[in-house]
Image 1 (tube, rainbow, N blue to C red):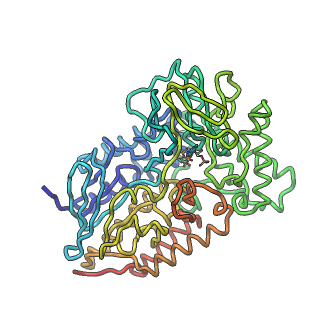
Image 2 (image 1 turned 30 degrees about the horizontal axis):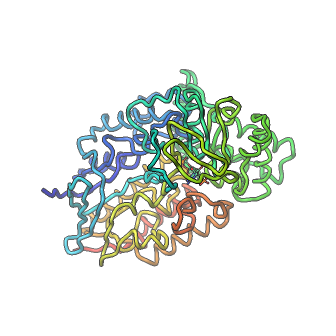
Image 3 (image 1 turned 90 degrees about the vertical axis):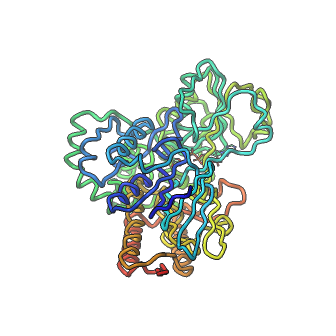
Length: 532
Ligand code: NA7
């Protein structure tokens, strides 16, 4: 039997849980649909060894409830996947939100009924729900990519994917393991897999920039200091370009002396991981500053990797530092000094196929017991285009988006009334702290719904021209950076045939909020609000 609700929230990760909690607080009849068997989103699926967030735990957590912030004690500076999953479970229990979700329900179809002004969603199991409003909190990196390597399905050993790692423990002790992919997931998993495997072969297509996390436990003193400064830290984060309290060195690179530059790079380096890209303001916009950061990185790498051939293979070329997300590692480069670990540079020695006994590259066959695919995602758009979304007048989202996703602030899609993606193309999302972007996005969608309910509107749909203008603005700000020139999942380049263009909004979290608030203050400018 089909059930009818005010709102459907698709997804039970950071954004979905926030939206469901706050929809309930408003008294909306909300149903959540989640493909996984439980809450957690990204942190439910990506439970590979070494999985850890690259944003500090104190920042990568909800800010909306002071008691929650005080009661939840993070144990490490960068939280592991199990700890973040425990946190999201705690949030679900604390706000009694699980009962509003149907788990194990993957949405496969969403159809707009214009006369009724409602969506009907259908899941793989055949469950159907109707609702006036739909929030798609289905994730930016949730549609895994499994490359179509010839013979992939003939492998006789075990195949694992970092993005859908089994829930039961995986024992790799004594096994020969191949890891394909050296993005954040591969780079985090490799050192841990190396501790178990008897042989480990890392297949690298593109060398990435990775900076040590300098992770550490948070002791009681540090925790007390963090709690004391938390209100200020949150306020700074909400007004920052990336939703975290860190900013670049106040003196421009050009005005800094050689010594000062070296000191600033060293300090940002020891701050850890992605924060290195913030050393100076111009790291990802000015080639001169970028080159200086790259030079510093290369010196650190050379001091870590002694074998000159391995060092050459691990040295990134072809994309400026920071234009693919800098990886945050714990002992990645050091792993290649171990006698049972080999690096295969696929640019020189490409994979020709997978066979029952292992992976064959141009230079020969490596026999393996396990292949781990750490090969990334159909980012930003994949979770939406995986669903057959049919809007007004028969529009089909996955067809519209073959050209490029055109959105008004990411939230509004012309042709698809009342369907609000969170953290989608045209939002800061993956370039900022997703815990805060999820709060901002969820709240914004709910306020738009509040506005409609208060005025008796039955639909809110982005206008074509507003969406076109925002998409052009997103491209314009990206063009002022070094990002647009790099092949990455930010630009759709990791998927053959995917429309190319910079997907997230890189103008900054705060600037995005200002744009969005202006739109709201003008009665949701750029949206057509109508009554039926
Ligand atoms: P990423 O960052 O997209 O990394 C995927 C990796 O897999 C990357 O090294 C790819 O090389 C590699 N890849 C993809 N397809 C192939 C094939 N066919 N052959 C060889 N290698 C391949 O995904 P992650 O899961 O690591 O991280 C995603 C985000 O999660 C990360 O940025 C954080 O924000 C959290 P390529 O670079 O495309 O040459």
